[in-house]
Amino acid sequence: MNKNSSVLKSYKDELEALKKDLPRLKAIADEAEEKFSNSRQGRPVYPRDQIGPYSNAKARIDTLTQEIPSLQRIVNWEEGVEFATKNLRIAKKDMARVQGEMKVLQDRREKLESKRAHLVAKHEGEFEAAEHEEHEAAQAYAQAMAEDDSGTERKAEGLLQKASQALAIMKQALKGANTVASALTIQITELDESIEDKQAELEALKTSTLQAARFYWSDRFEILTRELVKLAAHVSASEDLLGYGDSFSKMYIPNLSPRVNSYISNCEVRTLREAVRLEQLTDI
Image (tube, rainbow, N blue to C red; front, side):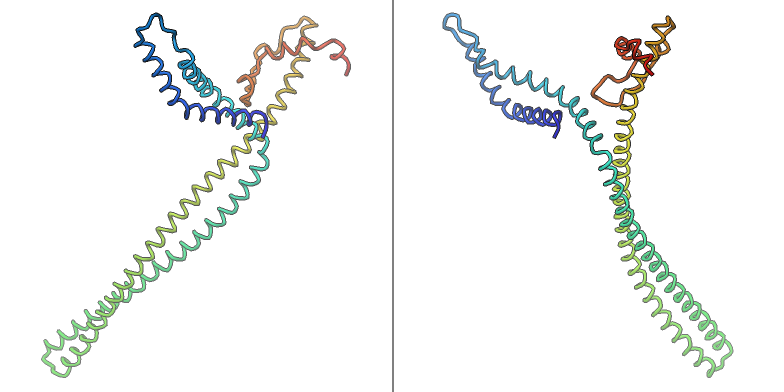
């Protein structure tokens, strides 16, 4: 834990303790204030010793409440830079793991969906075929009755009964297939939810990866920016000695670190320029 992390922790602990103790201090202050207001004995002394701790605690809470967010940003930056490479490696490893887990879930879903579709299609096809057979048998029976051929009629009646029985069996089988398909749909829905969870986890890891990458490149940008400002100061010093105009009068480079000003301007260049001597410019 670096210095800023240690200070941040102490500030948070202090703030928590003050907030916890504030009701007690307020009760003491209110009681002292009431006694002072109701006192009728001469010129009572204002109870600063009883009221002061409450006022001081409130003021300290306000100060800590303002300072903690700024310090937290600095600590986040320092830790982000320090662990950027490690966090990036861990996030990429976790992404590969989650992608593998999601692939397993997607493959399982695809298989269940295929089985569900095949099951329903198979039994619907068998039911339609049985329904067609019954229709054909009914037509044949009706034709036999119209021809008044008792032998053919008995035979057609028997075929119709068999077709009707087969249709009833297929209808029951289709109902069972639909029940199984409904159960499979529930499992597919559960898999969809798991896949969505994995996708959300993957997006969160992607964000972590990008955040780690930003810290990594931001730190290198800061390092190069400091070097760039030094170079600009040397160029500016040369121009100043030559009596030229300032090439960096409109210089503006954003600072990514929360520890310093939000940008670097010509002021920083001019400040560094003052320390540059002729010998430094020509000793190349």
